[in-house]
Length: 333
Image 1 (tube, rainbow, N blue to C red):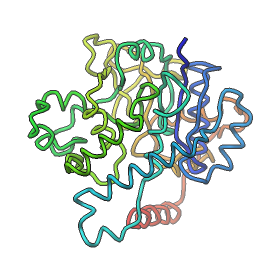
Image 2 (cartoon, helix red, strand yellow):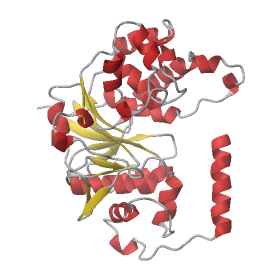
Image 3 (cartoon, rainbow, N blue to C red):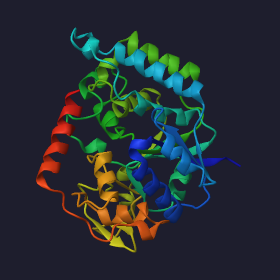
């Protein structure tokens, strides 16, 4: 029988979000499915302590795999056209930790599902594992709907090769925040062949955004010529739902969200475009403008209901201003 499990990627900065995700998985997916937490960096003291109290959760510790994917990412991005700009070559590598999610392909699970830590699981994932019996990759997002110029791959460059019509490239676009796949994909020889295409054949230019793990993932899944399924392109309309907290309207039924139109169950709620600090402050009882924040607080304190803030307190203007300036300075750095 094939082994199945879950992965996520975290460090202490997303401590509150990780707890909420793990609790939502236990409540809505399974209480005993094995979960591996991939360390985003070495700041993992708090999440390591939390994992000790969860028998089905462990830390991913295959450092050879982590190094393999970090080396791959650095080599690819060094060859990117943007990296050839003189002033950019002096910048340190950024977002390298995000590329660690690709260690899922080296891990112990024959079939797996990856959740970004800024997510909440909303339903069982049997349908994803069922699809993995037919497909190599399973997604559930609307990246294929983005207008040209905002897509994860340069459609014109990808189609100039004659290998793919634009319609095929577009339907295979996806994000990297939630996906199902299988162990053994992108093994050493396959990844080497893809790296040669990216660097030697300069196909890295197909990837329009420098140091973006999701954009690079799109190249890898497309160029590997493996089968994939996206629930948002399903012929079954009941399977096509939203997932973004700040964009899609949902209905809350007993702390589980459903698509507003048709009450269709969603796989996960994705809190994209919010910072970890937003959830840290929210968990401390501050009145932070986060959509579906009551859902987050429910799962964050599911095992500690007495610690859940009873009333959210407004933050004064000087504090708000200071945080805004800090956020801007971090982006500039």
